Amino acid sequence: MNINVEHQPNCRAVAHIRVPGEEVARQRKNIVAYYAQNVRLPGFRPGKVPSAAVEKRYGADIQSELERQLISDGLREAVKREGLEVLNVLGVNDRMTHDTDKSFSFSAELSLAPKFELPEYKGIPVKLPRIEVTDADIDHDLLHLRERYATFEDVDRAAANGDCVVLSYKGSLDGQPLAEAMPEAPNHLQGIEENWFLLDAEEDFLPGFYAGLVGIVKGEDRSLSITLGDDFGFEALRGKTLTLAVHCKGVKNKAVPALDAEFIKKIGGEEMTEETLRNEVKEAIRRRREQNRENAKANQVIAHIFEKLEFDLPQEVVNREAQRRTNDIAMRAMQQGVPQEELIKQQDEILSSATQQARNSVKVSFILGEVAKKEGIIATDQQLMMALANIAARQKKAVKKFMQEAQKNGMIDGVREDLVLENALQFLKDNAQVEETEPEPEHCDQHSPKAA
Image (tube, rainbow, N blue to C red):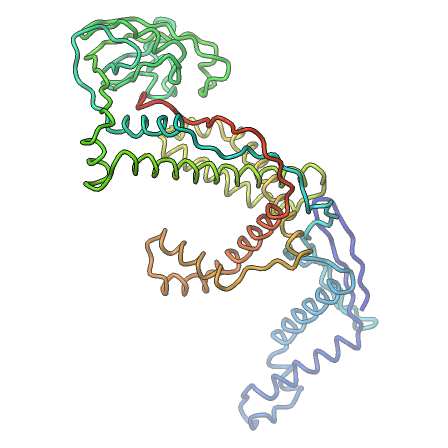
């Protein structure tokens, strides 16, 4: 068998394969013999159908089966001889039987796994903050717990930071209602009939919006001029000044319950005490920080190897992952109320971002896959069954029925591959060289309900 593999960019290759005439004849003879043994033709006893009759009746089927087998065997031999790791056969072209020597030739376009040499991956240096939980940390989380039970009571005074104001407003641009000047603008900028806003020194809605509402009283009308930054989410309004005609429908005082026996029993039952509550909160903080530490370790070991390697990626794999990510981004945006017209305008930006994320994700997957090969890392049957059971629970399906579906749609292989990559990542983390640093402050949302 003559094999010539032409390697191309983006992990593609074209295998040119020629099967000798004697091998073609041998395989054809075997196929005809199989047909003769198994087909039924009028006038012939089963198993006694002459080859000529079989050829005449089933010639097209025999030729099709012959080519299928020759291509399959040829590709298998090419993979073995050239040491190829084929991800997918993209197409088979130039099929031809040569009259002169009765040989059969074809070309197959292949998508290959990238080839690269891993750098040293044991003992990767990582820096992780030491885990400490102080009384101040516990008090901080208890405050947020209490804020979840806060009540808002109407007050007859001017609004201050920490108060809620109930507003309606209409947006305008250059003296024209925004709904007319720019109909495609987000609905919440065009105007709202009623919403609650918690005033805070940190502006997380529109720049200067909260500050412009300090001192407002029930029944008061105000005009706020809001200049939007160059990084504003809706591109058409970047750098423009939006005018909001605001009407205050009420001012509410935020009342946070005290950490007393009544509140503790309300959230924890009759047996709960302040001491046991603080212990539970302390343990929850510790678990959260341990998880953050594990995430940081994973990010650091991956980044260490990622930055040391450059190799081509299979474009088909990247495209498939980019499409999945694009769909996810669009789905989340629509769930958050982003108009479809806005998504269409941002589709190039979304696709670009999704493609870059996909390239990074695919590269990491191949790196972890190579680590798994080097170390003989697998996914156990117990891991697989537990993972499938968890998926079934999330989808609210009976485990037995879900397993049957997973076998039919090929999900099991995909889940097993994901588990192998997870185990490879765990191997890197387990073998990392950890240097502990001083505890870091947590960065999380410290504020209660803002603009809806």
